[in-house]
Image (cartoon, rainbow, N blue to C red):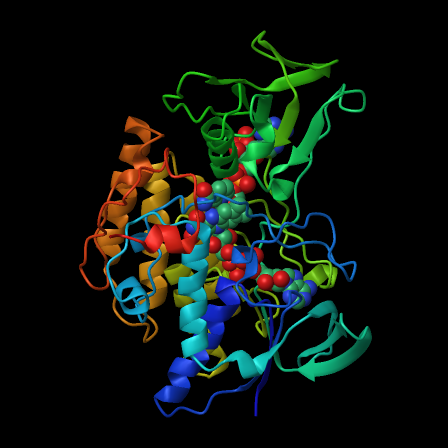
Length: 444
Ligand SMILES: Cc1cc2nc3c(=O)[nH]c(=O)nc-3n(C[C@H](O)[C@H](O)[C@H](O)COP(=O)(O)OP(=O)(O)OC[C@H]3O[C@@H](n4cnc5c(N)ncnc54)[C@H](O)[C@@H]3O)c2cc1C
Ligand SMILES: NC(=O)c1ccc[n+]([C@@H]2O[C@H](COP(=O)([O-])OP(=O)(O)OC[C@H]3O[C@@H](n4cnc5c(N)ncnc54)[C@H](OP(=O)(O)O)[C@@H]3O)[C@@H](O)[C@H]2O)c1
């Protein structure tokens, strides 16, 4: 029987386990699978921890999420086709839930799939060697510090790519008297109440960390972009300026001449795709983009088709895209999909990469990734989901953000699975200080 190793049980790894469960429940013979998870629980980034740095066993902390993190896209855009929000929560819920609510949803489907038996928790994969027919995988049980090596025919890497921070260096950092941190280590905006905060970056972390600091009472928030500003209508107390040049004492000096006193500098400068356990020739090397190179259909390693990566793309679509990828990989492993010749495979990759490189704005990027999801789904038996509606929702969401960055999370969207429209939340996002699941779901 084919033996598959899965590394990581975040949303992508859980999608893969779900895809096997679904095949098995249709009476198909599924391969043997062992899933390795270095945390003590599954859910990946959605497991909040107060910890930063390393855990009690010396492993780097995976989590990059923080208290008060709310979904930054409508939940309807990420809904599982085979497990709706209505089914999980037994009632309609608003469109932008806080982290704990989405974690509950992800884990709810996993619990229902009877797949925990496949997972070795507290187990870090430390190295992988290509043995010609498959892989020799070495892993360490963190609790008893025992290391083992086992052979597998196929390997699915689902270790995420938003955990190892990219940290640039600026003149003056060594002598800056305040706090410097990366968004990976950001846990709670309360810390910055009444402080002057400078945030570097122009993507989702910069936007949300800056907004959190504003919401929880920072005195000023100055965002330094490198290439393109986000350009939202920032509220009073927030501004966006061009690129930090250096730090002079407690002042950030920007290229556009702005000089800003600061108590804290938060680097929202993104993450590295980092696979320390893989040999060089199997390692995906890419920046955060919609179509990383060398991956057929975004998931099959071009030069060794026993190796698969899940979720390595930059992400508009998330959970249902991960499902589509997992279903696709499952069907290759189960010989239901036959891979084309090396030439055709290379052409297909090249075609997607060229299309991606020609994209000019967020709307085209949404189209690109929606088309990618539709393409994958056309080859597998993932239940039908209305991607055209999801595409439209993403467009509307972009418009809402352009209209008012403080209120876009107060909007409602309809489900591409059940058709239900999310009710309005009892409190607007700006006034909602409590992100607990009980308060969120309390709709009386
Ligand atoms: C701050 C932040 C906020 C986000 N907010 C949203 C949001 O609102 N909505 C949304 O849809 N998406 C959001 N995302 C995107 C997020 O990438 C996905 O939702 C999702 O978590 C990706 O799943 P994944 O399984 O690919 O990776 P991860 O969630 O990162 O899971 C990877 C898993 O692999 C395990 N692992 C890693 N290395 C090893 C190893 N060597 N051995 C064993 N196990 C290993 C980790 O412990 C982890 O459990 C956010 C991301 C960040 C950083
Ligand atoms: N739920 C939420 O609210 C929430 C909150 C935070 C993050 N997220 C998720 O987290 C994921 C990661 O987002 P991310 O923003 O951390 O990473 P990202 O999307 O990869 O963006 C990295 C950013 O860093 C900038 N950058 C790099 N070096 C810089 C420098 N020296 N100076 C200034 N800017 C620099 C890049 O700018 P250039 O464009 O100039 O290269 C880019 O804007 C996304 O999937 C996002 O959805 C969600």
